[in-house]
Image 1 (spheres, rainbow, N blue to C red):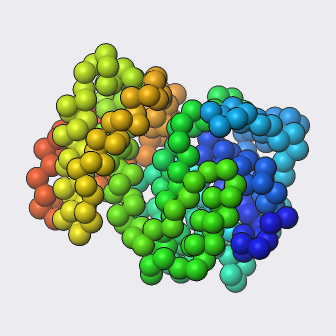
Image 2: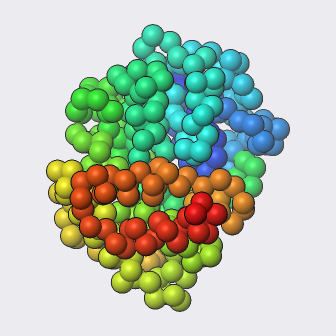
Amino acid sequence: MHRQMGLGKIAIVGSGAVGSYYGARLAQSGYDVTFLLRSDYEVVNQRGLQVKSVHGDFHLPRVQCVQNSEDIGEVDLVIVAWKATANGAAESVIRPLLGQETAILTLQNGLGNAEYLGQLFGAKRVMAGLCFVCINRLKAGVIAHSASGLIRIGELVGGKSARLVQIAEAFEGSGFPCQAVDSLEKAQWMKLVWNFPFNGLAIAEGGVDTEELLQQRCLEPKVRKIMAEVVAVAAALGHDIPESFIELQIEITLPMGPYRPSSMIDFVDGREVEFDAIWGQPLAVAKRLGVPVPEMQDLVLRIQRKLGLS
């Protein structure tokens, strides 16, 4: 097993699309990865994990997977990849995985997740990663990866640490790009530049994909306005995101085709949506800072109506 980068034993908590994809990449590279599974356990335990990727398909016929974190025990790194809506289970699920030096890396969307984990388990343990990737769970044990894969990771407290750099280097060598960043907060807002409008409009428009948003419903101007407001809030926090970053988000989205954002899938399937982390908290930050964000506010109201929250 690869222990030279300090990863040691890894537990994947939340083995949906994100957790399964990145966990499979790490396992494929020889890392000691155990997946915590619930509904998919029987299928994955019997058939393994299959990844259909633009970078080459692969199949892990045998993977380490369990149904209870107590069966894993203490690990060196916990990767949290479940939706923010599952955070209420963090204490009972994650606590059995923690040793004195265990690090926690959350790959969740939006704001507030790393801080919540820090309150439970100690801020110095916690890092967060922002995934710039197109992945969907097709069915139990089958993940589709259609574009990108970059993760930007940062420490919850302090700047770029040796631990952070080591993990980024290990990830980089496992088939997906990873960058260690000085400011986690800035990285979070850069991810929100895409997530806030695309996940939001996909729901507000009734459950549509990115291709329909941009090409059939001609909402690119609205997407750009929302992105500009997210950038303005980030600037008020002291984080300079260049205007070219907005253009880049449009450029990378157009070739995705009919990509279904994760929040839209949850909405269409009748599951709870990560409303507070992706839209509620960012809008609250804008209000607290006095940044005018009429487009963001209008989108939030539309999402609330679709989700029955208002």
